[in-house]
Length: 421
Image 1 (tube, rainbow, N blue to C red):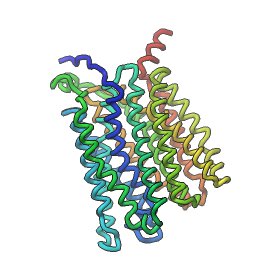
Image 2 (cartoon, one colour):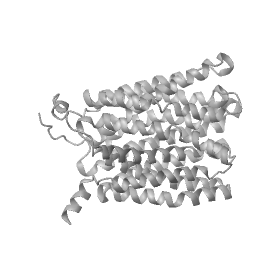
Image 3 (cartoon, rainbow, N blue to C red):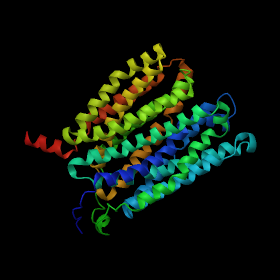
Image 4 (cartoon, helix red, strand yellow):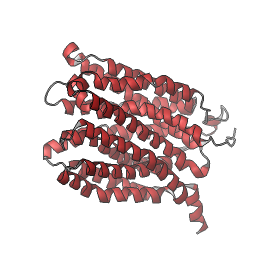
């Protein structure tokens, strides 16, 4: 049976999904931002931060499994049920993580339980991205898909803001000892208590994946070209390395530049604000001018500014300069990340869109993102060079930019303009 046209979902209702997405990613980001305090709790030795960052990376290895099982579930049963499953699993993992006793009480069992919760978190987030991004694309009018999918990344910026505000407030009101003992746990419990709100909001979203039970059967033979898979992985890889390199700035400020915890969380809040604004701007611009033009402009600008920006930070050791540079970096990243996501998702067959995008995204995150912060910390220690993050990210951006050049244009407006010429 042929798929019947759908009425586009109003943008204000799309933000309901986005808020739920923000709650889920908040839990994931909090682990990164409280890496130092978590290290003191579960790895009480001189390599605590490095071991914590390795544990943070462990959570990425189960993301492909989440993309496979929950993403494909979204193709077979529906986007909304898949999103509810991923959201519930994230809430369970986050609550469990907050309640694990410290190493001083239960010994080696404590870091093992920490790893188990991180694996479950990774599974949940890996299952979230495919169904939710497919839902946004399918909810949009054809000439506004970039803006709608931009909501996905804008609300991840909201998650960064929320995590930064919570961290900023806790670090301002608590002593370092209190932050190590129970302050970081409070941040996770806040995320866990908001899970019922997300369930309520998502429950009443309309299902967008099917107009009939025969949709998947009718289109099951559609194949995803290998070229599209390779280019998608390279572009998503560049985006993921950028995400976690910029996200490491919080830890970089404390561990390498020796700024206070409070100053570091101030940077996180600004990072989130720029992400919210510029993901929507990037998506909207790509609807008008095309995906390729916008994402190449943003990634090229970031590549040109990266080394000078890190050099300026290292020489000045100015908090305000760190804020300005990291905000600019994140704004450029937000612009091209929204373009990359919509370029891939609208190029995939609808019948396998949720599962394929979820697997692609989760797989490259497992390979590139899971080890990024660990590699950055190791490179800084091994070389003694605080510029190591900039060099590492520059290589990733160069490769990702090459893939963007080879990626076919997918925006309807840009394709029609090309045909008119």
